[in-house]
Length: 476
Image (cartoon, rainbow, N blue to C red; front, side):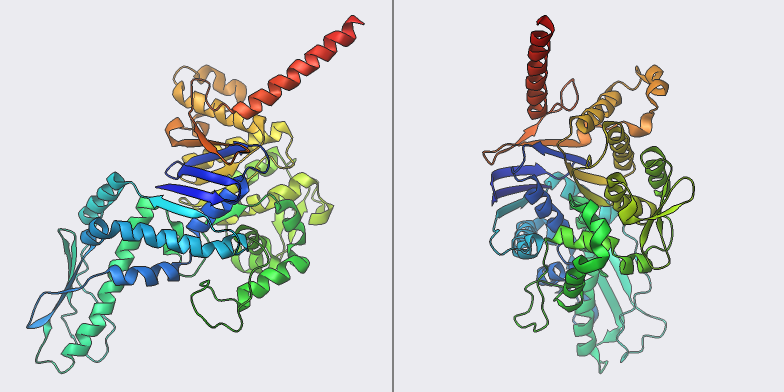
């Protein structure tokens, strides 16, 4: 899937290919990187209920029998004939959602989405091939006793058919049953539609009817938010969470509605690390808990991030001393949220945004963090990040180069402490440079891997200046 954006703050025009597993934004300050990240995060966080209401009218029901209840909907037809409508629905919802995304009514970008038609056809064919027929389909319509015959579901030639031969016109509840079943067919068709859309566009929010986030944003303000989320900062986010309409602008009247006081990404991060939420949600370790330990071992001097019985974040030193978060280093404050995510929440298929992953990290530790992200990408986690660090991008570049020449480079693996689980497929990488003219240019990966021209120019200028002054002083 690609998204084209115009008039987003300083950004005049940009097209981003969201099919990549690693997307890297670089460029000077104040060129729109955070705005674009916020917008993309909002795309994956559009509330499920809003999408469902928009798509229900697209599901067409066909009545296949005059004598008994037999209803059908054509999934393939919905996609092939109405996909432009589907794109437009997402565009309109995203534009409407911008008020919440940016906590501002002034930001009104133009947005155009385009889905890959080859991918659409592939997943439609795959869906039909792997569809499992339900032999006992239950409608929930308690006025009709179906006894042994609970109906039949079939899927063929792109159509989903529901048959209830015992519910004929002679049944006193025939009409009501058919009306009830029509809504159930729409629901089931939409659920199947969800599965296909998730494969086509990685819209992880689609399955989240309970609004548990599967897309995470580690904001640039995370060090401060980790420390103060349990004080005055959270009171605003909590007020918004408890009293606001969960579907922005869905109803005309909502007396309790309270607008968020922060952009969506910031608000969601506050709730992620808030003690009350941690106490409820942190129940067990994820499949990626060892990655959290790896960060602690290599960056946090073998300390450990602890969540106590009250949900408060603490840090345990190697000598077992326990520190309050405000007593820890800036590195700990920056990383605790990400460590909590890895240890308890991370799942294959997640999409994570990271604003300045190098925040408060020594170059040595930036390399460690880059390698952790590389392993996550190869395990099925999608990562979108913005960075100002040449150390960070150089490490990613090395891992891209090693993927190309891994058969020749194995003699160096032990020397640098790496193996194939770190190597990044260059075909999975999208690289974009931002400039102060509001332009975003896609950068090609070349034989040097990831090259950031704006970094190289400044580094060269600084090196030249240093060499000039060094020789000038030495000659004196």
